[in-house]
Image (cartoon, rainbow over the protein chains, first blue to last red):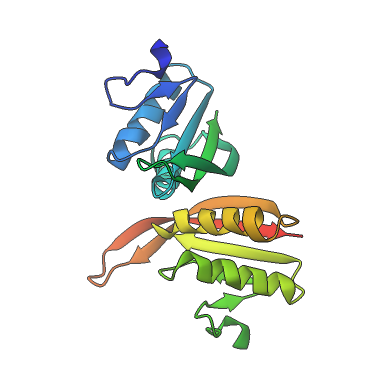
Amino acid sequence: MEDAQANETGMRMGENTIFIGRKPTMNYVLAAVTQFNSGASEVALKARGNSISKAVDVKEILINRFMPDVKERSIRTSSEELVNEDGTKSKVSAIHIVLGK
Amino acid sequence: MEDAQANETGMRMGENTIFIGRKPTMNYVLAAVTQFNSGASEVALKARGNSISKAVDVKEILINRFMPDVKERSIRTSSEELVNEDGTKSKVSAIHIVLGK
């Protein structure tokens, strides 16, 4: 699926979703600005584990510094199950922030 | 104000607010269970910076493993200004999760 491939900023995207990972915070802020400026009316930020804090940073920086007309539509948290390399399972928290304008 | 003092589990509390910091996640889960079991109908989790992820973990573990009757009432994020030791200012993201039953 082409829209799930990594783009030139290194983020995987699908249906205007930005997956927050280990890259610098500003990469993700730029990705969100780019999506809104390309005509998206809604952009979602998804993160798991320690990246949850970075997803909140992305939202705050985007709205406070770059796009004050963007509003939060929803914030949901969830618990996801991961299978470790040794076959055991771990639970990890996740966040899903939907922004719109 | 007595309700803002550290309690025996080491968390500062005021008006049923638990400030999530550097202690192990389960300390905060236990603090929330204790507050609900002491009759609170609402408990708030507050965290800043990298502790935001831990606040989400506390919410998910509390609801999924210990108190399934507790529901999320609201999640808000914000940006707070800190003054560094050298007098410069930094912005830090914060999260405020309100749980109720």
